[in-house]
Length: 314
Ligand code: ASP
Image 1: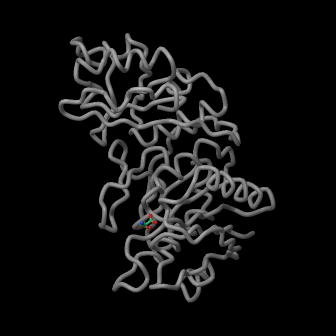
Image 2 (image 1 turned 90 degrees about the horizontal axis):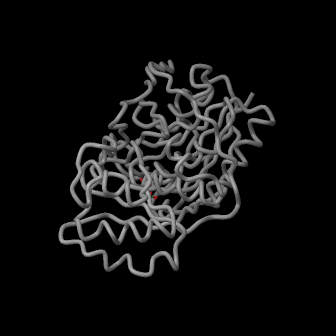
Image 3 (image 1 turned 30 degrees about the vertical axis):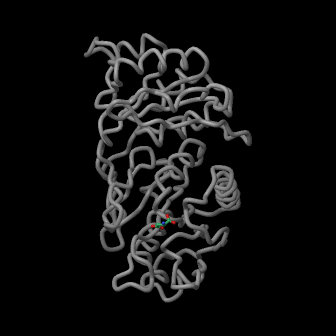
C-alpha cells in the first residue's frame, strides 16, 4: 500500500531558481526505504503559499480522498508554511476518512545549511502510514511534532519550531522511527465541501478604532470575523457598528491574542463580550481569527447554520 504525496511549492521546494519536485524531495532521503510503503507523488503546484487558494486546496483534498479510496494508507501534502495552518484546518473540516492527511513544509530552504524539509517530509510520511495516526483527521507534522490541524498555529516568522498548538500542545511526537500519539482529541463530523465560496472579511480591532473601514462591508461581503482585544472586546464606539453589521450578515467574535478563547459572561460594559453577543455577534470560542474565517467561509458556502457550526467546531 502506498502513501500519496502531493506537493504545492513553498520554501521546502526552493533550491535557488530551481523548484524541487516531489521526486527531488524524496530522492536519497535516509529512512525512506525502511517505511515499507511506496510513495506515489503528484506535483500539483510550485507556488508561494500566499497564492494558494481554498479552491485549489479542496482539489488536493479530493485527490487525496481518491488516493485513499484506491488503497493509499495515508496522504502527505507539502506546501509553504505561511498559509499551512489555514490549509490544514480547511482540510480537517472536510476530511471524513480514517487515513491520516498530513501537512508539512520547511522554514529553511534546501540551499541553506541544515534545511528542515527532508526531516519534516520523512516524519510526515511516517505519520501518514502509522496506524496510531488513524482517525485523527488532518495533522501538521513539523520538527518531529504531531499537531492537530484544528489547533496548530504558525507562531514565528523564521524559527524551525514555528508550529505550535498554544491551547493544547502537540498530540504526539515522532521518535526515531516510532510515531507516538499521546493524546487523541474527539473527532468531529466533517462538513461536506462545496464549490461555492463566500467572501468573508477579517478585521483586527486596534486603539482609537472608529470602524470607518467597515462602512459598506455588508454590500460586498457575506460575513465578517472580528479579532477583538483579549477575551473579545472592542472600543465602545465600535459596538453599534458591529451590531448593525450582525443584523445583515454573520459576524464572528474572536480574540487577537493568539491563544485562549473569547468569553461569554464576564464583562458588561459597552464593547464587551456580553454587549457584542447581545448585539448578535457569534461566539468564536477557541478558534483564532484565521481559522474562524476558514470555518465561516465553509459554513456560508454550504448554507449551514453559522451559530450551530461555531458551537460545534469552535
Ligand atoms: N513564504 C513561504 C511560503 O509560505 C514560506 C515557507 O514556505 O515557509 O510559501
